[in-house]
Length: 244
Image (tube, rainbow, N blue to C red; front, side):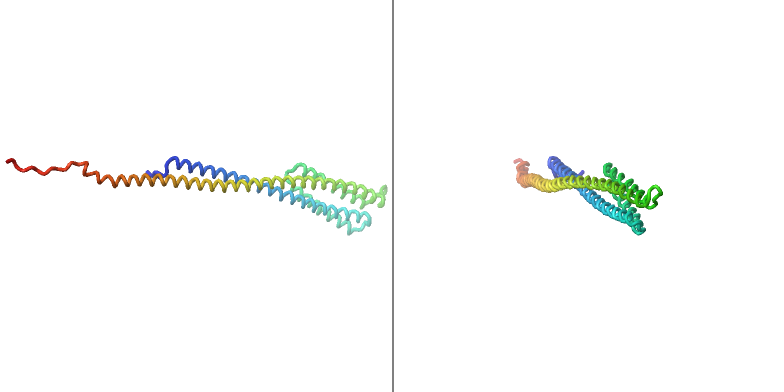
């Protein structure tokens, strides 16, 4: 049966040192994983802010073409208005996907959709004036009402941006704190590994010295034993002469 040349105490000490190193390493890996999640959150917030800016730009173009059409009633502005409105709705859907399950942000986004639909309805009413509402009056009413709706949309977009900027600052702060912790954790793991390596070397060296001393003692004893062997056995006397 195989038996270790290391003493039980040395084996137990090495096992304990190895366990400490594994625990420290696992803790550092967990911290690094958390840091990766925070970095992903920061990237997501920046992506949301970019999407909000794209949406704001689209809404600004929608507003410009709406005003141009209500002033001129030229079909080219109407076509452009309808096309830009579709793009704004697409940008809004993309933003809804980016915010994910955030209830506050989704509520703001869901509030923009009916406002865009309301704007489109106002423009549609201006296209087909009735006898009770001539073209000039219909365009003026549509313009005034659409301006109010536009201000409401801008307010929701501003709320979206402020909320996401606040979240981004919080995530960046948490990321910076976690980064420092991870760096310190890996430094601690490296230090513990060096200490464990030194301790293991010391334990093995001391145990080897003890074994070497024992082996040397056995060799000395083995060399001394053959010299004492003759004294341990009495010499046989020569046979005496015959009786006179």
